[in-house]
Length: 575
Image (cartoon, rainbow, N blue to C red; front, top):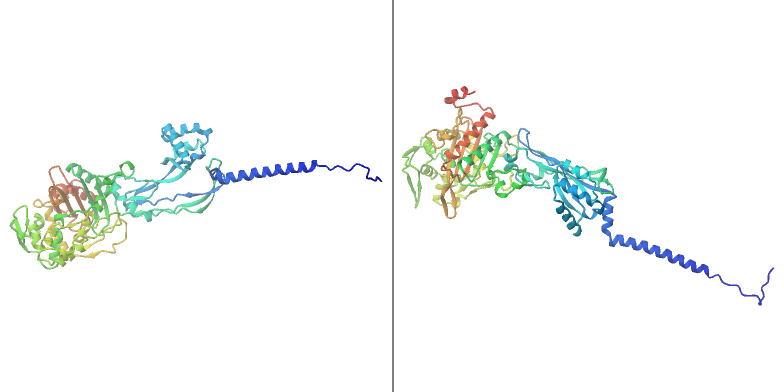
């Protein structure tokens, strides 16, 4: 055993181990600090980096577009459909320098000037944008060519684009959607709540470039919009469009509108306006062209209301069918004067309508109490919207009788001081066409009219219809409204346009409303031509010929039996 004595040297401490340990601990702490610093940098200072990478490399949730409901005519023919398209967008922050050469073919495929595309991407990247549309609603085949380039940061979105097979023919009626498939005008806007679907959601897996490579599951199914079945008959719509366009061209008119109604139930079978626009061409979408004049524009109807004055007076017992009216070319009512074009002398009721005498109809109107007279106009729908659910639909105007002066009732009898749309005017004529029953009008197909109501006695309506047949005779104001093989009843209107402080002396509205077959009317057609400038402006010369052609076509399409026996042999010889 070794024994250390005081004389032996003292043992030495090993100081190397503590130093190495300190160095090791210091190194570990520095490494941990670096990791923490990097994490802080990524989480706080480079948050965009994490978001971009996260979008590209994780399971995500994307929206699924909903199919918009179709719009169809009464026979199931498509009027508005949605077709699948692709939209292309880019996240400028994800574009790689190594893929810059791919921008050249992409620009060519998308029809972009390359310099413009590169400038756009640089501008949006500098602005820290992560979402920029390159092209909306393009053909899927074009999108596929871009997809084949495999450019990081370029994405594809499935959407639907609205298409209108009839183009301009139904443009005013249907309206259009915007690029996000939301209704902006017409039926598309008015019935947006029915047509619009509910977008869905699905969980997907994206690849390193951010492209969807696999659907994982549906979180929420997209709910398609509901289809709309209209009362419109596409065949009559085409016919009405063509003839109204011809009327505007031939008469060098500013505009025009025309409505075809089913006389028995108020269904709107056709509704057209000029000038027209094609909803498939967004470059044409200017407010002065896409306004549906047939429904949203109102005007003073002029002499087309005279049949209602006579019907009201007959129904109320204020005149009789054999009543004779004295006219002398001029009629004084207080300090006001009513005039006729000619001095017609003594007239029966048929000739009052045939010659369209303002003096005679004024005298008839003044036999009725204001409240009763106003009540008939009110029941006929004047001053009240037709209620077809169309955006901006006109109500027209009808002053309450309590505010009338004596002359107000007089001018109302020949269609001034009251305003209406051509649709409202056509609706009023259902009260004559369906033996005294007025029908509500509709653009949506229905089984029956729940709002039909009686305005006139059946015999009164039939009697006035007989009188209106004489308007279509050679001695009447609308000989050009005749339809071979059929009895036609109708009334012309030639209206001076209102101007600031009075009425124009050279601007007119040419109006005609008629029905056929007069013995049992099937259709009512109302047409107004605004500011014809070719030399003629009377309703019987400007509007009546277009009525005749549309009515003849409608009767032929529906196979309605002729009731005009005097022309039957001519009709049969042509078959």
